[in-house]
Length: 63
Length: 210
Image 1: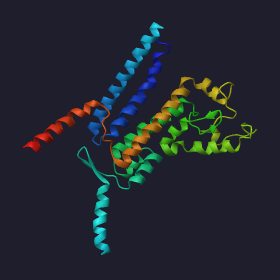
Image 2: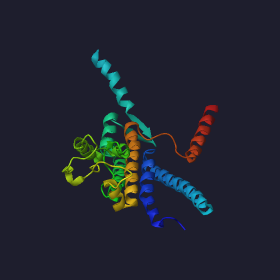
Image 3: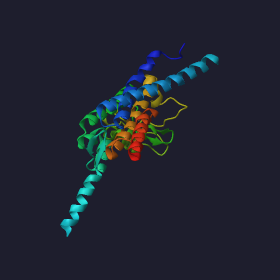
Image 4: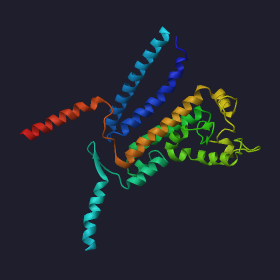
């Protein structure tokens, strides 16, 4: 069981959209490249956060 | 003589502000002014440079994040206070969005003027504009119930998340300011972009060999 409601994860959505698009747009000028980069950034950050989540969740189960 | 000199200097100065990225030529125009406009209103620097698509994206993404955070925190997450016990360091990052965060400076100064030597807000003091971006009444202490703890109690996680949203919006605008000043960043943030550049380097070497 998570110690907080899963609805808290909704806070993540606007942030990831905003951060990814701004990151992409500050590295490219072409719109399709911006979107590609944004998608890559969103995947990278989501993957990284998922790994951190799994590690912390695992620690939480052990302790 | 002076006319000849101007022929040499003007084109070179003009070329310094024209860069090519992704096969598109960008005229950065007056870089300092563009950077200042980008700080003042996210995306305004890009509009000034004629980069309307990116300007629109920045103004929507950054201001939406900032306003959403502000609303989540009940309008109390952005305030400028650097008094003992209530050093709001978050404001340094929140001020990255420029004009939107400036009312907090006026409110912060009003509170500073109306704080007595003991660090207490003067009796009867009411902040301007219905308390919009006003610091909490003083003293503020982690050990006692004060106005900040009331805001936390009222908005819960929204207060914390609102602080983060507004800070992240300010930080993102620093990237936008850089983009307005110098164009897109050249450094890839993931290894994915290395592949095409390595291919291109191999092609360049092949061309040199031939």
